[in-house]
Length: 420
Image (cartoon, rainbow, N blue to C red; front, side):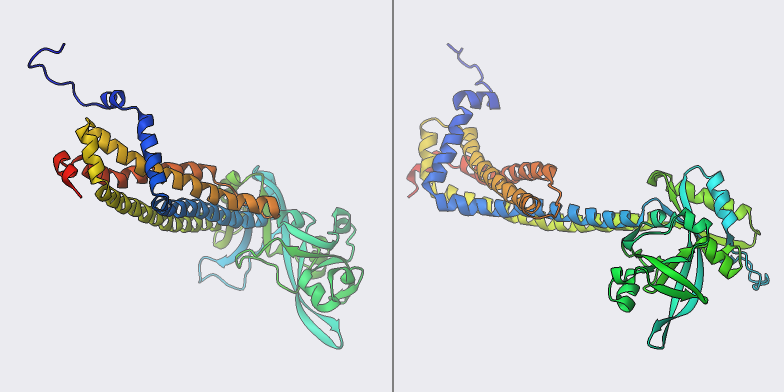
């Protein structure tokens, strides 16, 4: 027996769960849904759209970012190139050129341990006969056999020349795929054909193309021919080269390797000569920033959709409270506490959000899974985004269900019983 004048026990969550089990809240929520299925479905529809949109947005953003990074990877995130830019001092005799040399490449390979492979590039411009009395301006590049791997060129027909071709000064060449299609019909038809460069006949042993466009930084043109560097150097009669391309062992060593290569090259030339040693780090950073900004913008749209769905839940629950005032009065009259009434309506709001969130999540995940199973397209599946979407759905239900629940809990029981 409680003593007279004793204070009532404080109303806590533990007391609430003792007076009314949480399972009863769920059963009442299910009963409310069954009583008005259309209302429940229309209320949950906003959350279905919102959560599925959020997952699809993340999927699209991840796919776009993955595509961009893969394209850059095709160029080579480990790629570094060096070239001569001119003289720093304008008063210096500009006729004196201090170009890069093959020995610069050898010195860099010996002094910079981050370098995995390197190739020189010597530019030769030539006019060749393409038949029918026509001549075409072409760019002839003298390169090492390493060029294929360093620049990640794709040989679409034939082969790339090897070390033996370079050592024996074999007159072999590769042409671009566009050049082959324009002048020989297709890549296979160009193989074995002879083409004259500086009066010397070269046999076409391969057709190549770039892995992708290099953002305006490529030395390859539509009409480009590759020949062994050793032969190009003999034909040009010079030890100078236009560019040196390096590939590093890993992308983490690119920044340090770039600085070290520049240091080695400068140490071998005059102080007033200026050289540029660059890489694709800035392009990669811009691509990542662009992809992240795109993702953020799309996520904001998805969040707006979720908020709209939450507002819909709040409006429906407010309308539900107004139609169930008499029921609330009866429940209060038989002993239901204020917190129990609040928990009942809050449970309904959270359940609507959760059901809508789960259905939307399944729809959002079904699309990338379908593409992966029924097509060759690989779409990343954002499982983490699915968990976040379900969590956000619950949060939206609590956030927008609190106001209707509190309004229901604050209704006067006597006035509620009189309500018609």
